[in-house]
Length: 303
Image: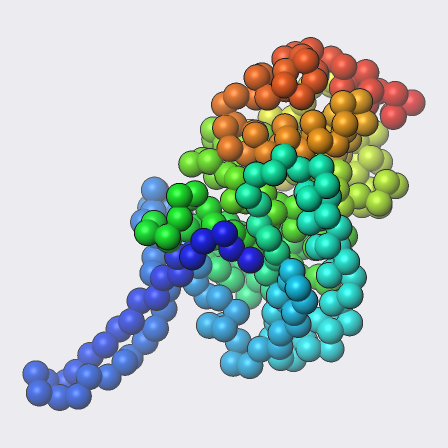
């Protein structure tokens, strides 16, 4: 699943009662990341992985996918395997046919965990419940084993729905293209590009998640959503932002071709500060020109 070895950190606590006593392993936890702020959550270096969390695991695998969960969910995972495998194969086929040839993830690792607290703890997320059905976690490359900073990704899903899995697999596919600044951070890739591409690929073409309806309800101001307000606490507003991203990538693919749209997204993941140049390469227009063209298209879908 990874383009290079990834960093997974373990902290072992070993004690002894006297200088001559036998060493005893008292505890094994994850290696903490250094906090930027004291208020930041306690995050660990890819810990706990499923094999750290579960006493007994169930695993389903195919050529390009490994599905994992607690053994108690074996039946659900087995039932979902076919649909999830099909979703993953479609994502990889799209990239192979129309992608720009940059090295993306060759497969997917997905953990099914319906328990909210456990799902939020996997791979060192800090236990923060974002209220999402799925989340993609970048796996940092071992500094001695790779040139890129991200070597792969892990998907954690609270549902077995293939639509959710496909959206997250698009994120996982492109994580190795990420530059020094992570997705969702200031200076990182625009969320309308990141979420828009995932929604474009995963969407069935209908209002399958109610996001177009959300856009109709929330109103449209003709502007591409920005990072600060994209992940809104207002669920309707956030759904509308996701839909605007989907329409942006969909419009680009329809007007200029899938190859242009995928090349644009790949380039933006790597160099988020070059948005104007990347849009010109894909569409011949800078951001303001593309935005005006896209806004007219979106208004047409809202009539």
